[in-house]
Length: 365
Image (cartoon, rainbow, N blue to C red; front, side, top):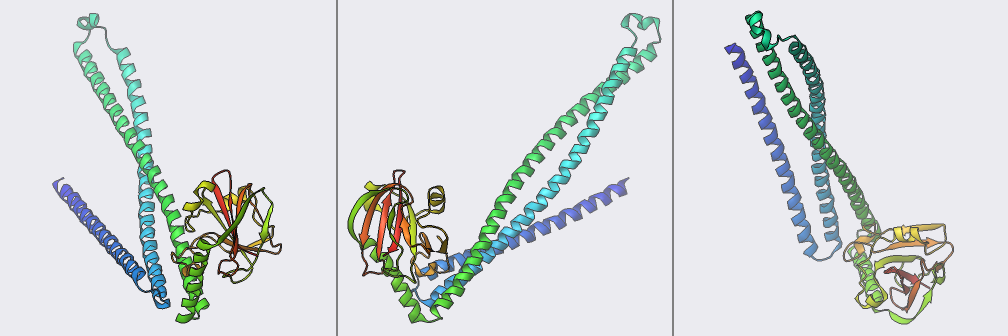
């Protein structure tokens, strides 16, 4: 018996030591990965402070790609660990379920046995007229059965508590897993966008520094023109009413409408900033599109193939084209008309709606 205990203890100690080594190794991998992520994050901050050149932009994109790859690896590791935890919890829950069924069957059997024994017990008044030793043995047996019943009930309550806790933990980990998978999908999309941004940057600039600086200056001029365009008047308009025609005034690669959405009222017009926009897609899907179908979106909102040209590397709004060049109000409101055809911006309209939204229409004829 002693040899068996020593053997079991040795096996347990070996398993424990190996598990500790595995955990230590995983911690070292996680720590090393986080260290690399921190290093690339710091590198990106330094690059952002450096002179804005084509070479530096390539370094920024390359560093962003490397950082995203590290974050993807980190998330994939977390997903793997969570999936293993969920599998282990499923096994434990199944074992507890079986154990609970066994305890329930044992408890029912003990209750039945307890009932039968109590029915067979000799009344106290007849004890001295009967076999006292038999009564005593029956009484002790009944006490043992009742004691076992209480223990079984206690084990059932403990097992049920553990079962519920394991199920709650599994549900929580499954929620974490779903969130991590969403995060992983976003990271993979960011990686794809960054790689496309690098390819497009090289394609548009032809890896030429002077060409990059020219494009960058044009994009900065567009923002400057937007802030200094001349106001020529305002009037109330209704949903679907024509505001003007899609054009190519200002800095543009061709006829198109730049459409944006802002949380802004007419009284707040002085506090408007170009970069403080919001996603316009839900709004135009709820009301109407600013141009007739078929419409082609040439540049979406966010990090796009051309967003590196903007100071914050983000495209605020969506660009679209349509064979029918008429631009329409997407909702009722008060339209402010601005004209600046000689600038890089061209003509545009700010349309304030009663729901606290403002829609922006750029590059009109």
